[in-house]
Amino acid sequence: KYKSYPYEHMQKIREQNISPSLRMYYKKPLLLHQGHMQWLFDYEGRRYLDLFAGIVTVSVGHCHPKVTVAAQKQLARLWHTTNIYMHPSIHEYAEKLTSFLPDPLKVVYLTNSGSEANDLAMFMARLYTRNFDIISLRGAYHGGSPYTLGLTSVGLYKHSVANGFGCSTVRFLLIFLIIWVTVYLNISTVNISSILKVLCVCHANDQYIEQFKDTLNTSVPKTIAGFIAEPIQGVNGAVQYPRNFLKEAYQLVRERGGICISDEVQTGFGRTGSHFWGFETHGVVPDIVTLAKGIGNGFPMAAVVTTKDIASSLAQNLHFNTFGGSPLACVVGAAVLDAIEEDGLQKNSEEVGTYMLLELAKLRDKFEVVGDVRGKGLMIGVEMVTDKDSRHPLPGEEINQIWEDCKDMGVLIGRGGLYSQTFRIKPPMCINKKDVDFTVEVLNTALQKHMERAAAK
Ligand code: PMP
Image (cartoon, rainbow, N blue to C red; front, side, top):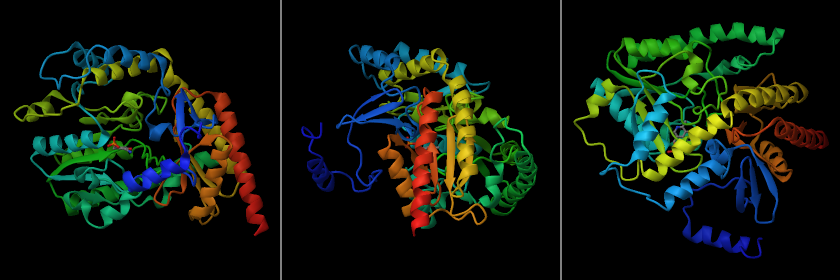
């Protein structure tokens, strides 16, 4: 109860003792007490459907019993060794994790966060190729460390990059002018508009690839170390690429001696439904994959997986990481993989995610301000616009009100995109169709209220 944790007192502590850079969601941030699977409970006993999963991190469910028990058992036995001695957990985990990955991705490095994983991936690309420049996409998020900030250009970081933090890398500025035409590619609805959109996509892909070639030819001729991309952009609001874009981009990068990195921090572990990894949905096999967030269901752990060949270029260097690959992390990671398999969560992501996309598409057809519904599996974006013709982002205060109303009705949704204009729906993968019906009902009510406010103006 708030009585035993006075809200105002907490706010005072925040003002005095907690980093002011931590941004809270909602006018009155939630004070949380407990989580169970797809649900969160606050200190007043209110229950919320968590559609953002601690920013796409709680993969199998809050306090999933299997993962919790595994962690508890290991906590009582041995937490930490810094891997200067052997422990079975890291061996078992590396073997298990790589059994989910195709050849030749078989060598695992364990770190603690996605930023660290991408730092290491960049380091590997540079060592292996003896080149320097790494290409990332506009709207990408690959981390907040000084190294990865140079790859990141979305959210609060877009200003940092514009101010020059990105100087260590070459930025590839994809113009997402017509990116919205890529929606529904992965939904099995067949109607005229989706067919038209598929046709548009081919055209869009040519434009993107032309820009990619321009960047390769003019900015970094023959000296590229690598290319990093998320299979679906997460922080940018579930932005998808045209169907063959990654395939062609990978080929162009490899022709110039670069290696390809797939950032699976948000798209990995079955979230996109049809495949376990996002890169598989594009028909490519990267040289390095980076994993975090869902890998530990909220436990701080991350990984880089690469080929024997690339790993050998790092073998002369000591790769030291105090906490990476601790017995506790490895046991948690293994239990998460078990839970995904035993609970059928990849299949659930596909079924429930597709159902969610189709139901949300009905809201898009009903409300002018719902400009786009896109994504794959349980990686969904709902973009809010002033109107479907201009596609300008809906003003912040109007989106905020819709979002606050959803929270008040018990549904927590994320935000993303350059203007925070996209609702991000990336829940624990255990949600069900009833949760989807509840979500759509709540969003429908919030949008209805928005229309009434607009009409009264
Ligand atoms: N890559 C992607 C795609 C991410 O979404 C994030 C985190 N939002 C990161 C990397 C960085 O992960 P971390 O916050 O664990 O450093």
